[in-house]
Length: 230
Length: 361
Image 1 (cartoon, rainbow over the protein chains, first blue to last red):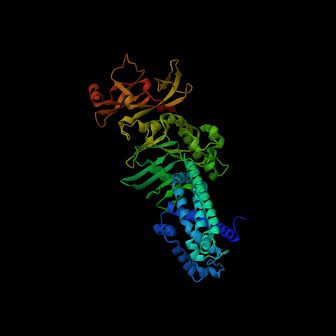
Image 2: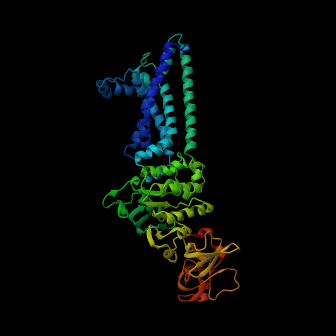
């Protein structure tokens, strides 16, 4: 890439990789959580709802610190994972975890809205026609919420691309390792003469964010026309 | 096939407490809205779990709360036609039709896709999506989808209530074909007396969550005590045979030897039809009326006289064509000296009979 320098390109590539995995791994969990929050009644539902939304409200640096305390090599979960040979702290996988956690509330909100738009009466009709719960979900609910799931995934991807506070707190800012696009912008702004690099990354950032937003709007509009007219 | 239903369930201020047996044919749950009809059907379908009860189809238990048995909806082998169709919006008509059949498995008994498509006249719609269908077309597809699930029992919850009169007239014949050509028994919910008259083999009348009356359609409808939707909806059900079509557009029916003239009724001479005569369309006369514009005069004998709420009274008249109900004012009943055993004539205006009140038998 002639336009981007090697360190800049590295940051963009790492951010794409981190966001891709954060979205992909978070998606099934997001669909499950959204379904549970939209359709089930269970004790502690409000607590789960609060936990899911916490990263949206907490200062990102606090989320990052909590991740470090929990998933750091001396943290309860981190120490256990280290025995299995998985290290998250100061690693790109940790950046993906931080991005995934921060993007999760946005993803769940989008999917939950689309699930709430599906008439449970359609699911009842499918059940009476012989579909078990799993089949009802696979043949009626999922196809109807697919646009919402896609919109949620795109939003989550865009959010993960821009995640900064939690990432830098949890996995620091190591070029080639954990230096994502926003971290790189921050780093370039700290060194004299780095404004040019920072500006190029800002342009990339804006293009990706705008593209994701437009795409998710488009998908959501298609969702509305698809479910109409039952 | 016999459907046996017994259940108790609290629904807010109403306590549903019903028990009835449905013999083969179309059993209509009849009653005004809020009488608990839909809850009964939903319990049979497994969409509502009653506090206590037992439902069985030919001895095959769908649930029995005493034995802690509960079959989930998808294992009950039912077809359910909902008021709003509930077609799957992301599937084509063909996919909708095939949905239940796919779970029921290919092969085996039951109606074939081709026959159902032909019977409901939906062949030209197969590749369309539900959003491109009219209300009547949607409901026809919904009937086909339920039928193709190879059900042991068909449920229908006010399947015509969301349609206008013209669409109702379009769909009713399909239910008649269902009753006459398909061996699957039907539990049908409605608050329309006209639908009861045209479709019912057996009627179960619900009032305030309780079974008020159950029995064969002709018997229940001719019972003046059964007025769940008010005296205005009362009417008798007559069975007649098409005698001939006249050049002036009238059809002559033969009802137990009495000629009845109606606006054109479709069908070849000899075809049996069911005819509902609303009680408020009948005029009574002590002497044989002459010089009247009404063409239909049925001689008969008063069997019962029941005062209703307000100034009206309901007279049941035994005629050669069957029991006829007439709604008159109490004042004229008194002036005419109407009492059980009195001979009189029932006069029915030819044009009073709405097309929705005449159907195939």
